[in-house]
Length: 332
Image (cartoon, rainbow, N blue to C red; front, side, top):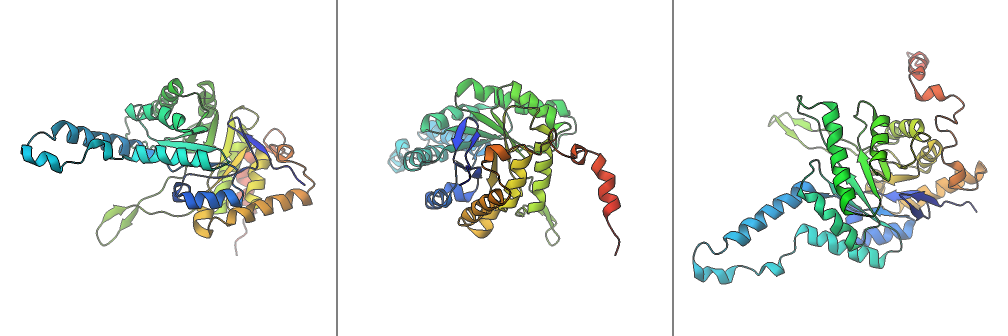
């Protein structure tokens, strides 16, 4: 019997399969099914900076100005204690999850400015989160902003969060940094317990009838996992923080590849949205089958065994592979 246990963010997990932030992890019935299918932890849907600040502004206006107008209308205003904000609902979900599930729960804050929303990290911790993921989904559209300033945004957010929580904090990052390795090392020095590699930027489409830019969601494919696999291979022996592969993990073999290069866990999202929560059990079985056939006794034995430092051909992870790929393509 193979040992699937792994350590992520200092949490002992029963396997490396973690459903990531999605509508599935925001629904308790789905979460229970994910746990039953073998999920070792889960990441809650993100609590967005914009939602927190917008809701706070509306409540401020409402509570401060409700006396303005006709006095006899005051009785029509609901008592503020009866109002449940998105944050309140989020905290209630955390408390229910942590009391009724046996797997770790990772909270998720999504924001890009070091503002007041960061203070809510403490509330997520107090509600019972075992760890916190900061998803700084930021498009650097301002051409006056330098790459160093973009990186500093992330660093400031991490530093502010670390001041108010004691639970592990991981940063969910995009691959669009000039030097991802250097930046992740910098985050590690600032106290990040992990890095989630990589966020998928959803690309707007153009409606040719209205000439509007419209949001469009495309689920990932296994091919997208290769970018994550490459960078985790390059970084595994150069950082000590936890590394999670997210984006394009669809099969047990995708999981194997991510573990081989040094991932501690793999996040699952698109595959579960497309095929349903029961697919998690199939992925787990595929992982176990591959390990048994190839005589690996544990995930720990598997992890990092062909990272850059351990690979038979480490140059394949770098530029040397570029010409080989081009030369290998045959015209039909």
